[in-house]
Image 1 (spheres, rainbow, N blue to C red):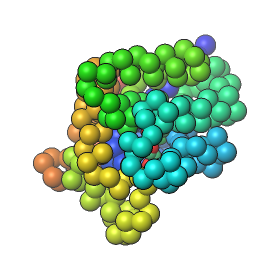
Image 2 (cartoon, rainbow, N blue to C red):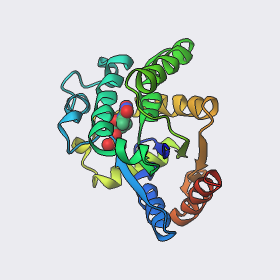
Image 3 (tube, rainbow, N blue to C red):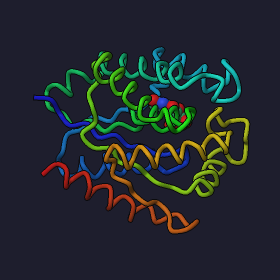
Image 4 (tube, protein in one colour):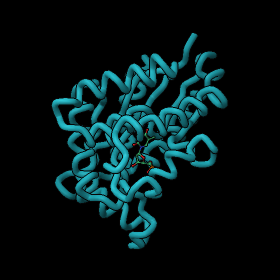
Length: 222
Ligand SMILES: Cc1cn([C@H]2C[C@H](O)[C@@H](COP(=O)(O)O)O2)c(=O)[nH]c1=O
């Protein structure tokens, strides 16, 4: 019997890594066995093209690589990870928690297209990743909704003000603003669970966000 796959999604600087870690810890404390995965799979050779793209080797603007080409870089990385590391566990019924997944292509690549092509792209991407590459579909997608101003502030803090450390997505504020719009569209149309991570421009407490995420995950497992 296949397991359950939960995707954690959010813009860069949304607190996703922190919340994924807290979620995994809370589930483990409840005796729930799980496997945590993360994309891009930076430590593996399968992420080479995604890394080249993010380092600006195909152009310094995200739009220098179209949505379909960039999506394929990330999708093959997922294919390699699934086949090599977690297919067996998933098919044996494990709970898999993914820090970014196919859903990131929907947020970050969809934004490159005009709105009238968004539904077509989503159909193409889902067919490519789930049908053609045979990757499992998430059972639940949690979207951490953080206002752009706040996530940018958190990102700058992460890099201690060193702008050069940002990848071509992180350093492009207007691109991230477009990604925010595509994320809102996708979350509404694909039934993602949206977690509001700030009140106005003030981030909510990490623990309060965590509790809400845990509740959504536990609801889905009953
Ligand atoms: C996993 C993944 C990430 N991305 C983007 C999101 C981030 O801006 C960037 C790298 O992810 P990271 O900042 O979480 O390491 O790549 C995609 O566009 N598609 C994907 O499938």
